Length: 79
Image (cartoon, rainbow, N blue to C red; front, side, top):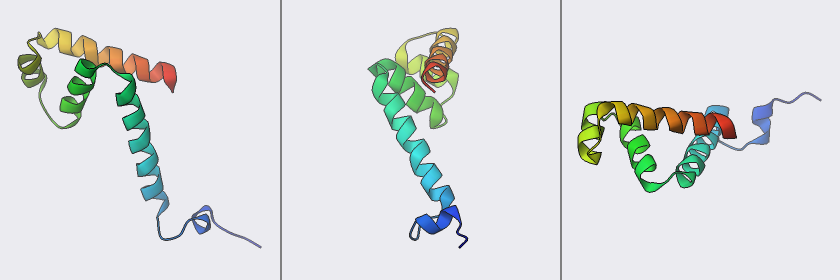
């Protein structure tokens, strides 16, 4: 008997399940960040520019880049 992986799930598509898993990983990653880092990542993911983030957090644009780089590094270490 043959079956497809999608047969294991009701009405949800594989893409939907993968999206939910990605979202859960994102939520877990946010939970591990301190409040400032989480806010900066959230703002960046929702389209704020580096200048807008820097102004909101009273940082330089370069510092925002460093923080985003650190977040990326932290994510790589746990993935």
